Image (cartoon, rainbow, N blue to C red; front, side, top):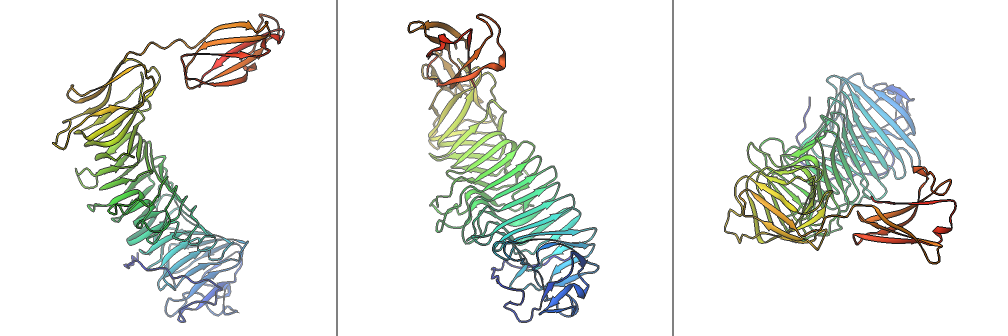
Length: 575
C-alpha cells in the first residue's frame, strides 16, 4: 500500500485538447479502444495521432497522461500495476461518457501528476463525464501528490464503490471548479475506504464555482480527510452544496483538521448560503480522530474574527440513530442551524473531556448534546422538541441574552442537564408554545444534576416571552433544587371542539353556523344528503372556507345554504 506524504498544492489546471500541457516531459495518450479493453494493450491507445505505439505508464518514468475524450460507455481493466501521470476525462460538450476502470487486485497509481492534478473529471464545459473506479482484494487507487477534480468545467461524477481501498492524494478533492461545473462524489459499499488524510482537503463547491455539488457516503463506506470545506475552499465560497452520510456503518471523519458547513475564509468575498451536512439512517461522523482537538463550524470558520460575513442558512442535521461527535468546539453562527432529530451531537473528543457547543444561531430538536452548551447572543435560540422526545446535555448549560423555546402539554419532556445550569447577564427568554393538553400546571423546563448559577458572574434567571394564551399567569420557579420550573395558572379550561348552533337567517335563505374552536385554522366543510334528515357519506364533504382562529368561539354564514335541497350537512375540521 502506498501512502504519499505531501503538503497542500495549489491547483493550476489546464484546459484544451489531449496534446496541450504545460510540462513537456509528460506524454499524452488518448483511449482509442472499443467499449471494453485492457489498459496494457497498446492498440487501445493513440499518442499524437499514432495508434498502438505504447500505453500510459509503459516503461520509463511514470509521467504519461491518460485521456478519455470519446463519448460512450467504456470498461477498462488492468492486469498489472499501473503508474501514470494524470488521468483526464474530457469528452466533448453536449456528450456523455461513462468510464469504468477496474483495477482488480492491482494498484492504479498517479505517481507524477501533471500540473498537480491526478484525476480530472468533467474537463469540458457542457459535457457529462461519469467515472467508476473498482478494485478487488488488495487493489487500490492512489493519487499521490495529485488533486482529484470532479466537475472541472462540466458535469463530473466520481463513483467509488464496493470492495476497494482508495488512497487519495493528501492534497485536495475538489468539486465544481467553475460557474459552468457541477461535481458529485459517491463513496459506497462495505470495504470502501477513502483516505485523504495528511494535509488533505475535501472542497465541496470550489471558489468560483456555481455550487450545487453533492457528496454521498453510503452502505458502510467511509471517507477520512484532514479538512472539510462544504461550501467553498480556502479562497472563497459557493452555495447550495450537500453532503449526506447514510446507512449503518457509513462514516465521515476529519483526521485532525477543521471543518465548516458554509464559508471557510475571512469576511471578505461573497457569502456562502444553504449548504447542508446530513447524517441519516445510522450514518456517523467524527470531527477529530485520536487525541487532537479541533473545531467544526456551521456558518463560517473564522470565529476569531469579530465580523459576520452574512453567511446564512447553512445546516447540520443529525438524525435518530446517528452521531457526529469528537468536536472540541462546535460553532453555530448567527442565522445558521444545527438540528438534532434524536441523534447525538457534540464533543467527547478525548476521554472524559466534554467539548463545547457555542451557539449564536439556532440549535433545535431532541436527543443528546455532548459537552457544555453555551446559548450566548441575542440571535441565539435553543428549541427543545419536548413533545417529540427529551433533549439531554451531558455537561453544563449556560444562557445569556438568548432564547429558549419549549412546547408545553400533557406529552412533555424536560431538558436534562447532567451538571450545572447558569443564567447570566439578563439570563434569557423562554417562549412557550401550546402542545396537546396545554393548560394550568407545574412543568419542569430543565432538570440539572449539580448547581444553578454556580459562579459569581451576574447570576440571573429566565423571563417569560411569548405565550399561547395571554390570559394565563406564567411564573419561573428556581426554588426547587435541581429544577427550573414553569408554573401556569389562570387559564380557563378549553371548550369542547364542536358545533354549538346551526340556524336559518336572512329571510331563511342563509345558514348561520357557530362552534367552539381549536387549532390555528378551522375549515368549514359541507356535504349533501339524499333526503331531508337522511343519511350522508363521510367522504362526500368538501371544503367551503378556511377561518383563521383567534378566539375560543367563532361562526360562519353560508349564504344561500338553506336553499340547497333535499339536505345540507356541515362539519368543522381542525388540523
